[in-house]
Image (tube, rainbow, N blue to C red; front, side):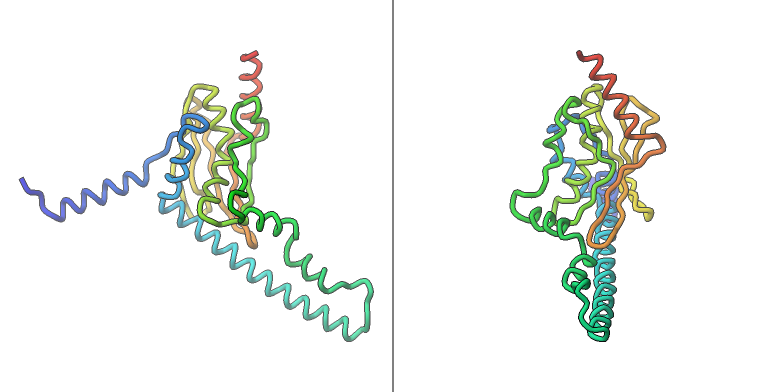
Length: 230
């Protein structure tokens, strides 16, 4: 039996939407982290929200630079009008207002091949995973950088879930508030966190938030696990 072309096209569209909207399960460090990055890249609503925040970060940087330029002109005019002022270094003033020179140097280094930080290296087990990042500021927007930053937020929870013998589930939840996704811990029904993105001049900030205290919950679970595994 031959199916109508319109039915086939509709079925294909529904299948595609379902594939893009399904959640992603992580079963432990190193098992499917690369696939997680690819999954995040394939989520159109998440990528749309990220790209909008990146554009806003660039727009904010342009506005900031414009304000700095006007301040520099005003300071230069005052300096020429009032005469020499040994306490006013216009070059240093401009650099200081523009941005933190250390932040720029770090951003430039991260753009070199192989120099981007690897968020998984310092958190392989609960014994070595003592710090839980609640936010990550990102100035490098190259391909894969945002996915790595999200992974650095999720990684401690992946390690915790592996120790508990449970997977971690990521659910697309992009909306206009800046929320990108939900993070659910299997086996702990009441623990659900959200990952948000927000813009600042020349950078975006990725943060993990929850109605509970995520950091307190992690530290308590980590202590219980380490005590029981002695």
